[in-house]
Image 1 (cartoon, rainbow, N blue to C red):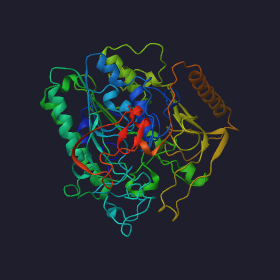
Image 2 (cartoon, rainbow, N blue to C red; image 1 turned 90 degrees about the vertical axis):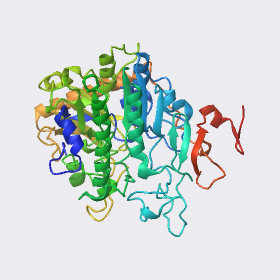
Image 3 (cartoon, rainbow, N blue to C red; image 1 turned 135 degrees about the vertical axis):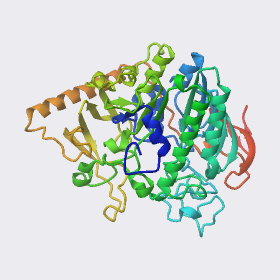
Image 4 (cartoon, helix red, strand yellow; image 1 turned 60 degrees about the vertical axis):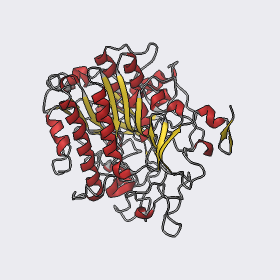
Length: 515
């Protein structure tokens, strides 16, 4: 594909790449699902939004309503707004997309591995993954260590939502993404003649790997490659709709991901090469260098930007950019003013998008902080990048490496580095060799610069009067279930309203609520 010439699973994305700009140095705002999406939606680090970890099926909180989302900003500027796919910023009504600036929503409230379905996909946490249907017996299914087992820790199945209602539980993964495409195309058609913002978040490449197994089965990379092929096809449908509606000249298309592949999932987690964090594997005791880590494999993402007549075709930008930049950039392009009194961690990418050479010089001294997403205190800033140099004050973490590497799933011991490990990512993208900061004065000066940068960002957060607070409490009463009397909450063709936070906290049990 456009990031790996040896892969032939993404012809539509490859064609899209030829129509616009590829980013070679684009980064997610965090290395795990929820905080990455919060950073994308708000343009602010998790230390500001309060969103530093994942929301779970029992979570009572969500993205704080004090935070302003891209959708809220654009809707005030006259845009029609729609969200399709995985949300993962809170599943109670107060926090769902239609309460956070989106006119409508079709998708999942959180990850599709937070409960069972009738059509499970591959997951290395589940030895008998194919048997883990919602109706499976204890003899055939895995236990609670498998999140998609009917004996999962939350005792629930995965629901599908339309706006603020549950319409299907458990969701049928086989047809999910074709339905996503149908809904997204319908939204664009209904928006003809009006500005619109469409946010589509697919679930394909998150374990368990899900796709239509009856249609996509020819990739040499097995399940992962088959899922990429379906993802590629669905993206192609959306791009075709933009072209057919005659709005390609007024539509900016961005394509990216929310975090790197998960090492514990082995072949079901994809391939982060060349961003393999080799130092960790050779000197740090093993462990994951992908998702949940601040090694490059955890947060460096594929990136495409397409806007015919505005963004140079078949161009590449080596500028250091972040998904934190999308909020500020969208505000600029829409002619919207940023909310007053709020500090943002992104910058306007217009000089990068619309410069023939990719605008790399504009961001030559760009500062980027990568928050902990599993290596230490969540959200804490212990990895900082300026230009070609990256410093890591902490290594080790919660996620193991793929068991197939050495025959065991090693977890790295937590280590604090003072001075930090320093890498030149231009010459060493695999982060194999830590530079000698003790004997080389230039590298020592770079470390001092990076330390000052880190301290300045932390000071900025400490002085920020708009820092939000998240309720991280959990309770089984927050579990989403469309039919409590039905085993694993089964309902099809349903239209069940989502409960609000007040509804949940006022619940007395027995299917009734305190009013």
